[in-house]
Amino acid sequence: MPILNRAAELQGEVTEWRRYLHENPEILYDVENTAAFVAAKLKEFGVDEIATSIGRTGVVGIIRGNGTGGRTIGLRADMDALPLTELTQKPWASKIPGRMHACGHDGHMSMLLGAAKYLAETRNFNGNVAVIFQPAEEGGGGALTMIEDGLMERFGVDEVYGMHNMPGIPVGQFAIRKGGIMAAPDKFTITIKGRGGHAAQPHKTIDPIFIGSQLVGSLQAIAARNADPVRSVVLSVTRFDAGTTHNVIPDKAMLMGTVRTLSEEMRDLAENRLRQVVAGLVAAHGAEATIEYERNCPVTVNHDREMQHAAAAATEVAGAPNVDTEVDPSMAGEDFAYMLKRRPGAFIFIGNGDTAGLHNPNYDFDDEALAYGISYWIRLAEQRLAE
Image (cartoon, rainbow, N blue to C red; front, side, top):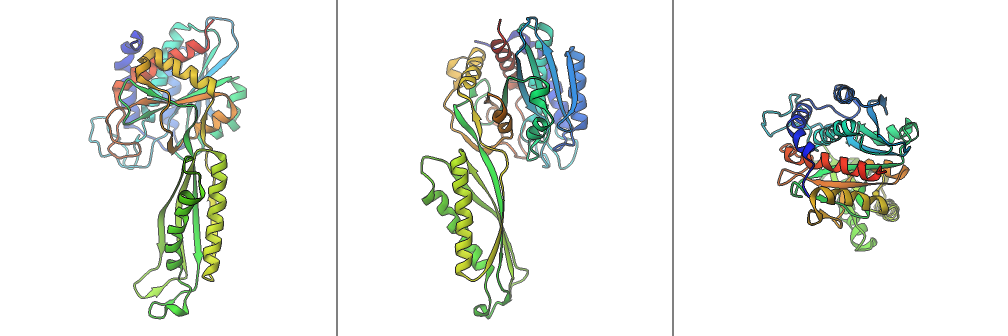
C-alpha cells in the first residue's frame, strides 16, 4: 500500500519548504515569520478561511469539502524551534546562531502544508478540515493558549489529531498505542537553607550540601519503592548548585529536576512523596526547605476509537506490517495533551530513520518521510469525513 501518487509528486516542493523553514527557525511564540510563511501558503492553496494570531501567533486554515457535512477534523503541527546551535553543517542548516529545528517541527509543518494543498485541490471529503499550526510547543504551552483563545469552539473542531517524527523508527513506518503515549513533564526546584560556616568546623554548621546529597539518593526511592513497578515514574535531579569556594560551607543549596509520569494517579503520588521526603529529611537535620513544583502539560492520552482511526489511516499508507499499534510510551512530554483533554483524538509517531535523537544539535528531519506524513494526513481526513 504505497504513499499517494500526488504526495510523491509534491515531495520536491515540500522539501524546499521544509529546508527553508529549517534555515529560519523561530522560538516559542516569536514565530511571526514562520506563521506568515504558513498563512501565505494556505492562501496560495485556496484554503477557504485563514485565521492568524490564534493563541498569539498560531494559524488555522479551514478547508471545506465537497459534501454537505458539518463535522470538522483538526490536524495539528507545531511551529517553534529550540535554543540550540546547530552542528549538522547541512546546506540548509540554521542561519540563526543559537536556534535550530532540533525536534523536526519544520518537517511537521511541511507535511501538513502538503496535505492542505492536496485537500484544497481535491476536496474529496464531507465536512471541514482545520489545519492547525501551533506556536510554543517547546515549553510554552502553545496548545493551551490556542484553546483558551477559542480554537475548538470558533472552528467547530469535533476531533483532533497530532503527529511527531521519531528517530529510531524507520522511514515509512508509524507507531501508536492506546492510552498514555507521552508523559506529563513536571519540574521541581528545592532550596535547602542550612547554616553556613568554616569547612574546618562542620559541627557548627547545618550543611545544605550534605543534606542535598542525601536527598538526591532518597528521591530515587519514589520510583524504586513507592511506585508500582509496572507503572512508569521517572525522577531525575538534573542540577545541584551550592557553595563558592573550598573552605566555606554555604548557607544554601539548590536542586532542580524533573518528574515524568503516565497517569494522573502516579503524578499525584510522585509530587506528594517528593514533598514528604524533602520535609522529613530536611527536618531531621535541623534545616529548612522550600519546594517549587510546577505541573506542565498533562499525560498525552489517545482516545481508543480515534487511535483506531489513526492506525487505520497509517495502515492504508504504509501497510499493516509497518504500523506498530503497541509502541512503548515515551517519557518525553507533548502539549498536544491539552487538545486531547478538550476533544477526542490521537497522537501518532512517524519514522524518521537512523538520525540523531530529538533535541540534539546534530539532528535533522529526514525528507524521505515527508510523503508518508502527507499521505497519512490526507487518508485520515478523507476517512474521518467520508460520505
